[in-house]
Image (cartoon, rainbow, N blue to C red; front, side, top):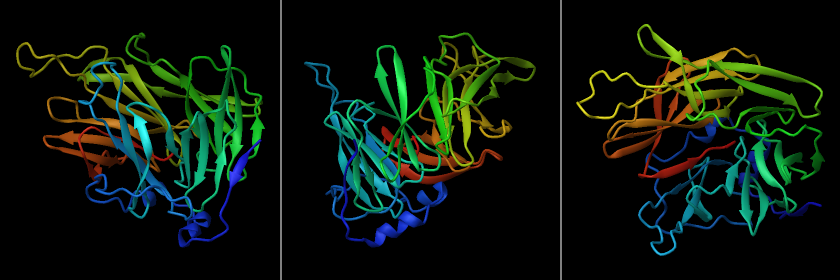
Length: 350
């Protein structure tokens, strides 16, 4: 059963519904500095606001309840492609309860134990039946993969946008797999779930790509050998893998098994160098390599997602935090906006 409500009044922003935007266009009108509004406006239910560019909230690391250890509830904001900001409720640090589709049109929100899907280019809101969890947006923004856990296994269903039609899938159980991409609502790309440093280093990460009807399967690989210094090549640890973008790619964050100190001060811990290595999920060809600024002191870069052909990073220097887009072909960075300290950014398709 799918519940839905819609307002027939057409808003000027609803024209976006027939004009899909690229990831670069969605992020093009971010303000130079992203700050919570002094008097935030709640996301209206009676009019369209246009496609979403990102969601964000600021983690309050010093406001933990000393008596219970409970984390504070924090305001979370939607930033639209036109640069407007709206309040979309409260979240706990680390909680997954808000998400944007890859094309920015759909906002998923978890309320009262149930997911709701809002069309930001109109006023329609659809309820996901209770018991389903959001797993992955399709790369084309036309479907949402849902999971329903029963015992130790999980069954999958597609939620078609904009109709809300549910289609159960015949995919086999996939224990310990991480969802990376839902390619055009037809193929599901996954990798081993636990890719962290507690496992042995590896020469490559293999990504399985399964047709949702269970008929066809293929795989692509990301080489993860990591060069620390000239002539010193070893298998890398892989603490993070993400998928997305257009064309669809997957990127692995690769770190050396151990760092060889060079100019570190005596007694200072060595900081591991980090490299992003990507693969095109359709062709299996390399998508590029990006060397990150090693986190050290007040400087560093963090891989947070993909937008179109670019890799998005959060970069911090002394007194400044920024959202940065990196070109996989050249490694060149461009600043999209500056951010308050301790900001968590949620990108379309995450």
